[in-house]
Image 1 (cartoon, helix red, strand yellow):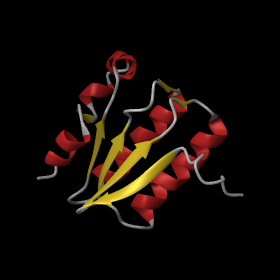
Image 2: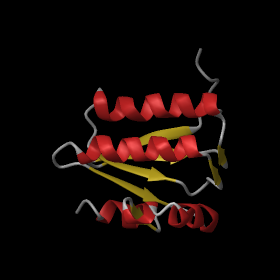
Image 3: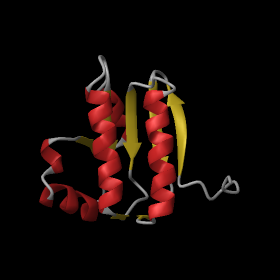
Length: 122
């Protein structure tokens, strides 16, 4: 069953050679929604062979451990492929605190804006 238009938890855009995923909901906590997000994001890497992915969290204020797991799985999938990279951007203060507490700032590439994130690939 597909979500009606407008309730998609994220949008995927192609910006030059990069795939930008913009999350559209303030909360990424619902296990059912996150399962859909995970499958969709893994599909981008596994089936569509997208290698340069930016996850934009500008609109997100709350993340569950399941959401963090999805980000880490994405990072691991891309790390295993040549010429691949995952960059996070638009991470707000609350999320950044969570990322630092879990020491994920040591593992993940995080930039303040989409523009900065795209520079990582240059």
